[in-house]
Amino acid sequence: MSRKIIVAGNWKMNKNAAEGKALVEALKNELADLDFNEVEVVVCPPFTTISSVIEAASGSAIGVGAQNIHWAPSGAFTGEISADMLVSTGVKYVIIGHSERRQYFGETDATVNSRLKAAIAAGLIPIVCVGETLAEREGNRTEEVLARQITEGFAGISAEDGAKIIVAYEPVWAIGTGKTATPDIAQAAHSFIRSQLAGVFGTDAAEAIRIQYGGSMKPENARALLSQPDIDGGLIGGAALKADSFAKLIREAVAGSKN
Ligand code: 13P
Image (cartoon, rainbow, N blue to C red; front, side, top):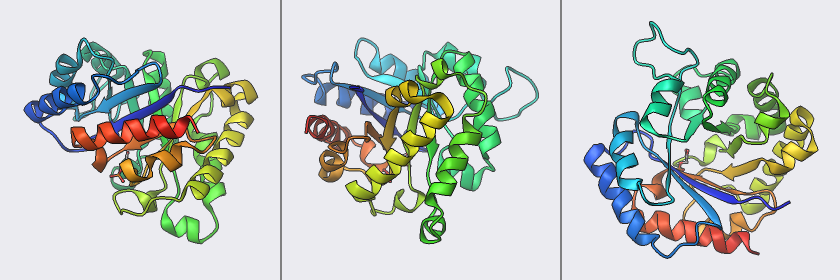
């Protein structure tokens, strides 16, 4: 089964409206000769930067996503953003369950599941993050943690909807630390994740689901990571904040995926 690779930039809490516009304009130039049939490219700015980025990306194949979504359609949830609000901006993707949200904002597998259902119902493409902490890896609990995040996070989702989800494996110990999982370590986790997805959604859906790697991915390691059979793209933090490094990383990822 061939899966189209997908490279997404998670800008986290970086780039105001003007900076986001400038970054996307620079990225459009850098990617002018990219074959977008070979790779899906997405940027995920902060909420307040979405509109200027959508405008800057219009007429290009660069997709735009949000970094979070609330599960309720509307109501007394100060500071939150609903699916309908996201759709109205023109975003097509939404990151759900990033480890920073789990770590700092009380996100759990249950809230991931609620957000995921809201995103699917609104027709957004969810990018659901899973991954173990350093203590969990050192305690030999990586598989247990991934299995729980997948079974609880994806409970009650049909195989048809499941096949459209993008999963991002982001080992917490590799995020922003400069420590990347080796291609072998990442592949082992991705293969395990796919086996768990098969348990939840069946083999056909699991084979269709794209699994991104995230955690200190950069132009220098993207090719080796993407040459692994179960690594179908990347979710990029730091290296996505500059047009030249993000563009280089995308090209390396495409080259790796052909190996
Ligand atoms: P870094 O690429 O900065 O390690 O961040 C990865 C990440 O968390 C993407 O969501």
